[in-house]
Image 1 (cartoon, helix red, strand yellow):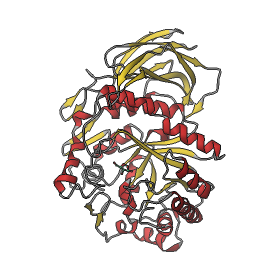
Image 2: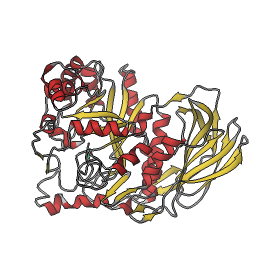
Image 3: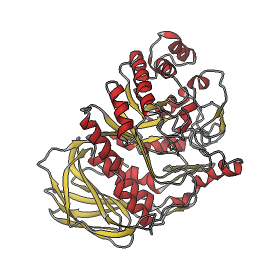
Length: 501
Ligand code: AHR
């Protein structure tokens, strides 16, 4: 494949928030994940220092919390202050002690150095409860909730800028699901009250690539919204934990940009160009939680609760996950004019890129994709087009043959210095693929990549097959050809300073 990079055309600046993350009160993401007061690896606030270090290394820019389905029957007031009221979490059907609440979350974000992004309860919650939460977090001293925050030991406002109204309230599975008509009105009223509390907040609302849902939402509340929230999971594993194989995952890459294209078209048609997309839950792998939304099937904990531990099997998170994640991040870079935020779902445990166990952490294959993109790639997305793109007919998870382009590449430069960096993914399971760089550039060339020994390579406790490798390739010449290893994610750097990782 030849990548043609047109340095004469304007570049687009991508927000660092496309490398964002999500953490939910589900299984071991919070309790036993990042928050583990009993662990010798935790700090004075009960936060796992090894997890915080790993989050800081990939410069987590924004962290969405507390859900996800969890939030749609969550009441934030039960989880602040001295007295915490344990919650029976009706979404995931477990008790939540509420010992990790807003103040613990904000403290964690400050330690990571990331923006908090709070998703509110638009299921059983009200516009008033949502805006009370904004009072608690963002007002200086006015009103009872700011005074409550101060009494809880936080004299200064938390200054939470990003707020989402609801989570997937369009879905029958969601507690407090709404019709399109109900949703548009509720979002408008909630957004009005939130903006009255703090007009500096940026608001998103739960949406999907569905015209009738979004037209009602945007007609009623488009004036109040800064973001529209969409989600994507491709390998649906909620009920059956049977992972799609490598080739089927490569077929999934054909549809990575579909929902963005549809939402972009709708926003343009409705002349709502000020609204950005927050792709605030995405992962190749859907989470495994059988029988939770269809209670009649799962009457025992053996049927709906204990199987969740299967999410913790590290052997499943292979180069398929890493290659898919890189293709998704390439899409976000190419569409950075409309995608202002994306949140990997989740960051810790379940299908996340960081796995915790009692003696430490495992950095799954996808973690290294974030390391490569955050620490090696530029923030200026260059205008490119490709020729001679190799393809292969691969079988989808349903057994249908589909044509898949085998190389996915994005070229960038650096807003704060010289040089270029190209993210190039070789999806080919079996063969190296040549990439020719048609661009005017000079300087030293280096490539950093992950590929593992095979498509099935993974990392686990005491087992590390996927780590970032580096190679210097001498001086760049226009038209230089670089051989991309099979099933690999590569960042090629030209004439720039050494990577920061
Ligand atoms: O499977 C996890 C769930 O996926 C999240 O809680 C929800 O937002 C999405 O449907």
